Length: 186
Image 1 (cartoon, rainbow, N blue to C red):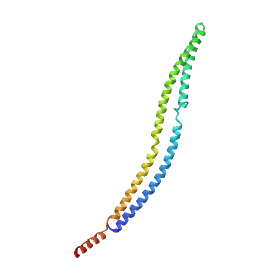
Image 2 (image 1 turned 135 degrees about the vertical axis):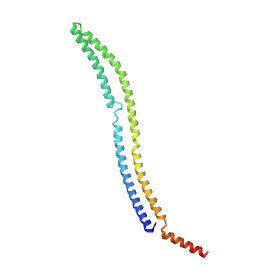
Image 3 (image 1 turned 90 degrees about the vertical axis):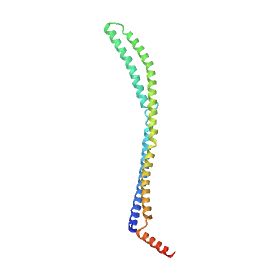
Image 4 (image 1 turned 90 degrees about the horizontal axis):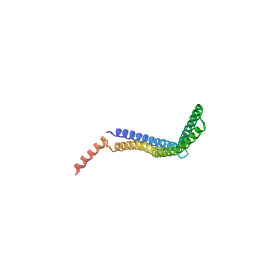
């Protein structure tokens, strides 16, 4: 390789190294911004957990269970009173039966709400686990981008150093000539 080729290789590798360094800095800055955005969004996601006590999940589930229990008792009472009216019987018996059904539904409602609470807690734990699992993602992405650019920069720097180490034809000829001249004097 001639001295001009070595210089060209050295200059090219230096320019590439500078470009990779700039890319690494830009990637790092962008990754920092992305990580910050990700952390902010993750914080919002964690705060919006619908599975906390008194949260959207518990409120909706309890309301559905209560409405179902109440509707069941009212429907039975209405059916029994309507039947009593059609057959000419006393309608107050239907009221008593509806009250008994309402009490039974209320007792059943307690166990249904307990089961719903267990389900809510399990879902809440999974929600929290998802938040924890996602917490390290931003830093990993940032490190990967910066590492890739740094690796490319180090590679270009290595090429630059190796190009500078390679002796030119003139250097090799001069060293050989000097060796012969030095060897002839001895």
